[in-house]
Amino acid sequence: MNTTGNVLEATALVKHRRDFILGPLDLHIPRGFVTGMVGANGSGKTTTLRTLFGLTRADAGRITIPPTSEVGIAFDQPFLLPDWRIREAAAIYASFRPGWDQAWFDRLCRRFGLRANAKVKELSRGEGNKLMIALAMGNHPDLLILDEPTSGLDPAARADLVDLLREHMAREDASLMFSTHITSDLEHFADYLVFIDAGRIIYQGALDDLVQDFAYVQGALDDLTPGNTPLIRGLRRGRGSFDGVIRIADSAAFSSEVQIEAPTIEQIVVHHQRRTNEED
Image (cartoon, rainbow, N blue to C red; front, top):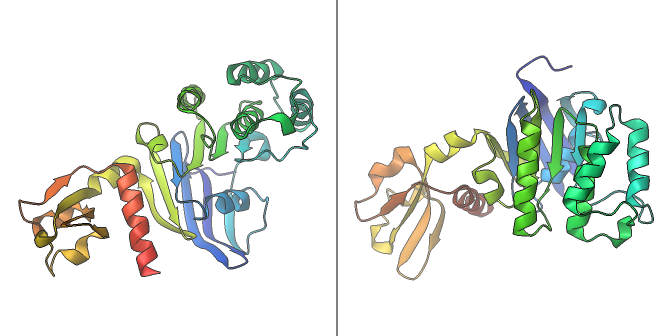
């Protein structure tokens, strides 16, 4: 069992999938916090989660994770038989998940608007996500892992899910890790960030540190110089203007005519991905 301040750790983790290589990754998920894993579709988020939890075999590396009974995981697509009814899926989960709380699961289903007699194949994508989340939370796991939990949800349902996850985190020692390509999910919820792109970790650490280290810049093309252009990550040139992301420490390289402001997570991620794609 992991006795460090991390609830989950991976060292030199590698997974080969056809023409895609994940890693090597060194991953550290802090205990008692919300960690968001962000990256574009195809960046390696789901492969990372599947490898961490043994659903696909790692080619190299070491993984330290809590016992299965203490972990709830929900992927973005149901892996249940299509003709199962929700109540049947719950009965299967209850048979192998210690501490299963049927009354709690039933409350989650009512909150999500799921009918106990509905078949898995009758559910929309958003409803399927809700079912997998309810099943993952059915035994009050200490560590909750969600893969793209807001995918397929409308704004109201997304807000309700965030409220539910906040309630989960109110428990002592509860930890949450979720992957997403919707960066707005992270802005006011996540404590830590793992930014993955093309199978590599670009950044992992406190969300506040990432925002404080970078700035969003925009200005006229005439403000670009041979000295400051290489400092801009994901430089985007438009008709007479440019924008991108820089490190705060490089701000002095730009004239007072250039607008420098606090970045959003989306701006940091998008411009870093542009830079990575250009380097590849």
